[in-house]
Image (tube, rainbow, N blue to C red; front, side):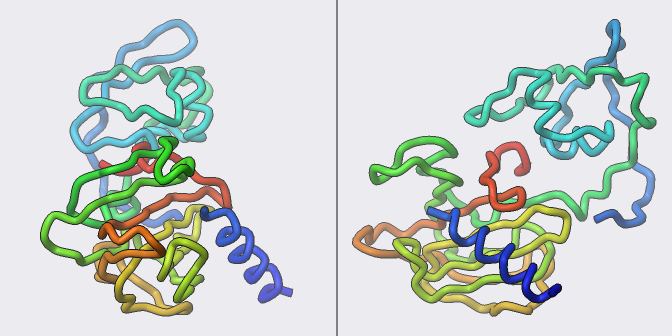
Length: 221
């Protein structure tokens, strides 16, 4: 039954492509301002909406709605983020940086989340490499899917991060991992390449919650 459920999860995740650990204490947010029924958090360097939501024990979607942040925007350094009903929440938690995402490829973003690219709505980010073609795991996890030619995306990898989040890496020229492999954040998993009729070299990268695409800008520093 467990294997059946795992296969169904991977199938749903692939079809839509077109944890807690002990951490050392970290500094509390240096700028917090109370407001009736809540407080404001000032965005510090390197913080993402996802990390802020974990600090205040909030669902990231709830936090985005409270601040009217849409899927096509990202937060900025110094921006004030409203934390509603803070008195009902746990104290600000230490955030484990090992759980953060990193960019999977050093390069230039040529198509953002929600934009139209090659007559399709982009469900992730398209990143053109700047020199080095090496693709790394954006976060640690287990490889749960690989296809040598997945639709128009070519060689495609999916990594399950164990907390309902997964990352997708498509359009690879060469792949170094296979399903069942455990990978660490920053470890090399592939080399960026091409797919289909589009001969431009770039990585198609997605972050998904269950099988639903998320805006990677909320997770990436």
